[in-house]
Image 1 (cartoon, rainbow, N blue to C red):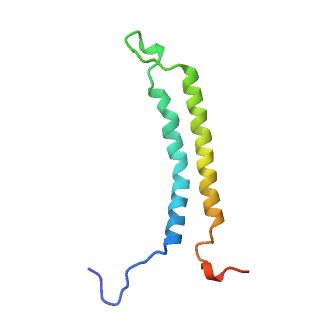
Image 2 (tube, rainbow, N blue to C red; image 1 turned 90 degrees about the horizontal axis):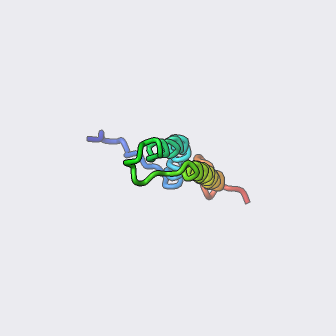
Image 3 (tube, one colour; image 1 turned 180 degrees about the vertical axis):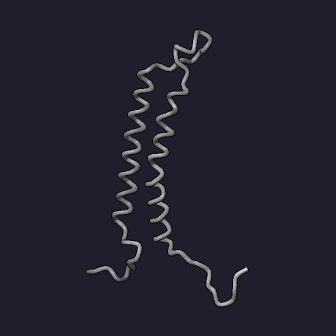
Length: 97
């Protein structure tokens, strides 16, 4: 139910993607906390002899560092994509020579 005379909001594809990348960059710490908490739920030797698949502490440490490096790489790649494109208010035709 739109009123006559009002045009629908149209977001330029480039600025829309840029904003979604900024949102993804903001959500990376939350994703990292979630992924770092997963080893807490892994079965260990303290759970008793009834647990068949026990995870070693070294596996959890390797997992934490792999998650850490992956989050750094994801943040770096998102930052690089945000940095390489034109600013949100700029037009591709108005860039300098």
